[in-house]
Length: 308
Image 1 (cartoon, one colour):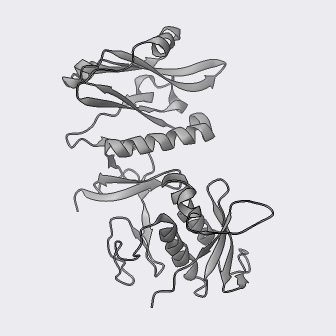
Image 2 (cartoon, rainbow, N blue to C red; image 1 turned 120 degrees about the vertical axis):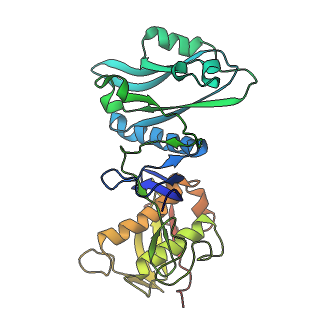
Image 3 (cartoon, rainbow, N blue to C red; image 1 turned 180 degrees about the vertical axis):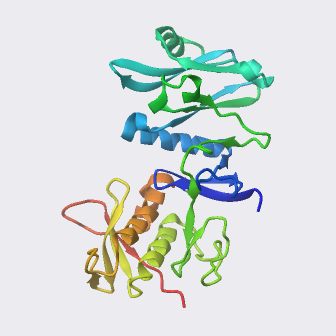
């Protein structure tokens, strides 16, 4: 198959992100994606959010910007505390050497007090030369134990793309849901069940409407009569009631038509938007707000008509 354009994710933590990859280049079944700098920035933001939630169990990606004629700079990436001592990575960048393609233009190491003073009061990347970026990968759980391998500079390949997490992270294909309820890997442009294409399965690409189609497809595979659902968008969102007209469908795992995995798939579809594609505003601007004593973020999602 060779190199393809697709999207990848790691559960609902990282992604979905556009990338290029070779589907045959796998590590224990997992994918090795290559990202543009723009998508490396998106991934960086996601890793920093995850670090805030989970601490040093999460790797972080950092993008540092400068210019080809910037003066040499020092940057400190803080990582919290371990055994009463502050953790930090010092990144020293010789921007002019980087522009010349010199391998040692970027160096990393443990941040000390001097590094922190330089980063706090030192010069910032300036100049008017070509824009440059340095991408740093920090593996906090191994920091200080594996030497240089715990911090690496992710250099772009000849194609200008960054391989982040390849042969290391559990990347897998992101999916799109057809209105018939069939899930497809992102690069599979036609639904193998009904023949609709990814681009034509819905007319309006508004995230709220896309998500309503996805929710309907997931739920109607088990309850074809489903017409709407109630979701609570507190935190990143979850579904808590499903209706057929005015009648609520039993969502209990042992008595209703849905199992935990099905409802979890619906939650994942909601969280793709609230977590990665603009936040709750993308949904609340379209979905119907429902007054609720327990939450101010309950919305009704009305499903599109079933595919004929």
